[in-house]
Length: 467
Ligand code: ARG
Image 1 (cartoon, helix red, strand yellow):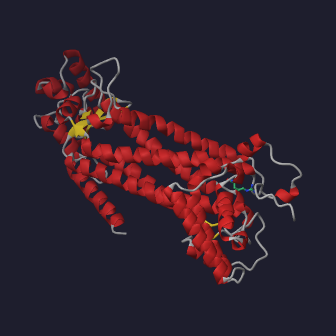
Image 2: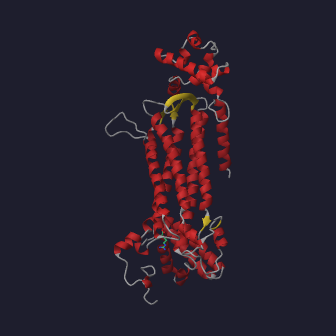
Image 3: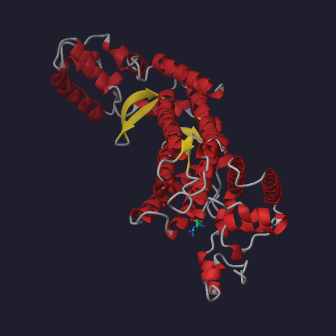
């Protein structure tokens, strides 16, 4: 052990230096330095535990903690010099610590391996990221509910197959978005449970012969408990895959919202105005105002789903326990976090400034015989079986199409020609207001039902805010 080359990991075992390109090829510091704060947090807890079990003296522990705290500050200030020779974030920090505090630094890695260290760092990192994501998600959900509250009575056309289907309220449509995101919030909380367990102590793969106190370290780091199997702890990244799946679902939802905003802001729909600050112009067509933010979010949803596929493929053939393959988990994961946070942020900023063009929404609902179902239901209430009613209304719609009139414009005598059950009172149910008002059950589109949904949502957000 005389020729220790501090530039190279486990150097005593190697007869020759690493090829310069291989050194670059295998290094991860360029991207994993992003977990520096978590790496330091984990090391401080580990050192504290080591001193508790008598492996480090109190002085050694304090030297380590002070050294790490100082390094953490330098990293945060951008004053730390990273070296590719030290391969990754873990080795960079440990080597610098030892350089500064001497022999105590070399004891930090007792009873630990980079395998349990990196698994811990990612979990700490993701836990922090989830909190940040939750903040943006709740901000967006609040913005949506606030907009919905303004539009509980705003009538628009609802669509199926992108064809005018039935009249709905804009508030109801927005509350559908809210429900999607509410489930996403729940999924995020749920995946956090499986993120929040601590691999430290698994060491390289088999655990360690030191009398470590894993419960204590877990407690110091705010983990719910230590992981239950050392092999599993260092190897599986299912928690990261699950997180990326949750992120992909959120992005899929945002992409659907985006698609609607893009359609609605087009001249053909003209339902909403997206404020200029969230759009750009065209370099050639002076009249253009492009919905860039929704378009980019729609595009980025593909990128996040791509990361989910990458991580699944990365994991699927790995034998137990740790393999270097897993170093490849970080870039997709970090990009998922960044992309998701940025998209949620852009949406949370944009939604409060969306303006509904209520007149256009109303006019669109008047087209396409949106209350045809109401006429059928009316006939059913008068005693006709639904299938017969459906047939009769089909004939009325045909007449409307041929004479270019909507159902309210057909004469009573014309309607009675199709069924004698039709009376003067039919016109109130053919109105858009009448149509939506009838759907006042739980989950329905009636202004009264939407007001209740908005209230429930506001209470939900309020409860989370006070937690
Ligand atoms: N940079 C590595 C990673 O990201 C750290 C763990 C390395 N462990 C090892 N035995 N080479 O996975």
